[in-house]
View 1: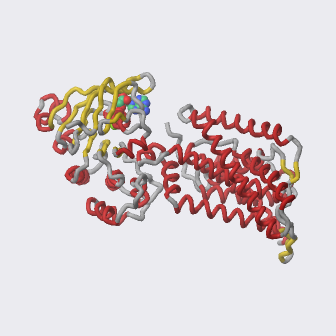
View 2: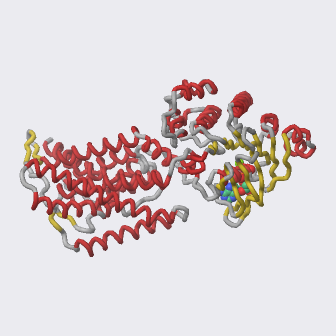
View 3: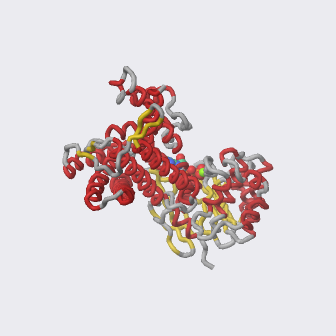
Length: 302
Length: 236
Ligand SMILES: Nc1ncnc2c1ncn2[C@@H]1O[C@H](COP(=O)(O)OP(=O)(O)O)[C@@H](O)[C@H]1O
Ligand SMILES: [Mg+2]
């Protein structure tokens, strides 16, 4: 029973990071029907901004209040930088290909991904770095399970940002326009919606969520390197497909499920298959339910 | 008086295949002008080019005397041209209210209670359905929603692409009655139809299109009386 709760808690914490990344995949797919393979690398950039900013802050801020304040500042800075990178990614790499065959954008996405990964190795250096301690770590005993304040921070921050996203999508004029563009690009433009601007904003929002994930990841697993985005990126992609690509709540559920399943596999006798399970899930969904848990199946438009 | 909407020598192609071979057409302020023609004649292509969804190979389109060729669709909408696309283009995943609100996307002010009342007067059924997902509406109700939505931007010119397509006769009557009412209140209308009879009794003037060319234009009385129109479009 302890094991069960422990695995569940670890899984939810890891899963909420996947969920934050998966949201970016799914939102971009929603508006452009494009799998933005560079998205995992934006997450990596978020982590690195957190690394440099956190190190700087650590030297210049002391005390608990200051540390919370500077952690928030680090988070905002990472979001800002990733927002800009995401914006430029769309503007420079994808927009010129908007009317080209879809395979062109897909290949470009893979190219951008390589650019960020190996560009990252050039700029940040290829060696792993230790993510600074943004917040003092505390061990918490909850009955028989042991956890840290980090897991609760991860959970709380993830919930806040998912709540914000939920509000933006379902409670604002921009969100209504975003849903319209996702449903039908052309008709949305006939409403007077500047579709290009909505698409740019979608990339910015998704990238900001990836930045949040990058910081939370750095906090939880404090070894970061320029290729760190590949695995979480792929798993978050699987999470988005599991939830139904293009479906926002689906991405959250998919992320949590992947996190939880991984955690249980990791805690079992099959622990060496931990990293592979996500791909088994992907194959199973693609075979039996390509629309995911919550997606409607839409045959490819001709 | 100069026309509010004018098309001059417009050529549009899909890839290398031309769909419009240099058409010209004018709509005066306050008119209902209809563009009729068989399936594949190029009616939808014409409307989509006006609203900026397609770029012409050649020719000009002016709105209020200014060229709008090359303008993005949202800019054309902003200038005062509202396009109800073929197939209605309802956002099925959104509520009826959200659809109407999106119609007013460009407005600085909110859609007023009176404007909602106006829509509900034109189409009472939309009032009952206002919170429903638009995908649950019947075809006729979706057409009502599409027209109401297009009015929310307070357009000068309304482009309607086959509003009667697939609707029951009763519903067709309703839609055409509302088209006349909207026009009577001052909105200029360019109406594309395959239902030539209804279009010709509703509009003031008409253009007849065949395989990408305008082959005939006149006031609708004359068109209804013309042998050519009667043979080809009115079943005798
Ligand atoms: N997306 C498209 N790609 C290629 N050809 C098209 C496309 N849309 C329409 N066409 C062709 O252009 C011509 C005019 O079509 P359209 O404007 O839809 O006619 P209408 O609305 O009068 O039925 C037809 O020959 C049609 O096959
Ligand atoms: Mg048509």
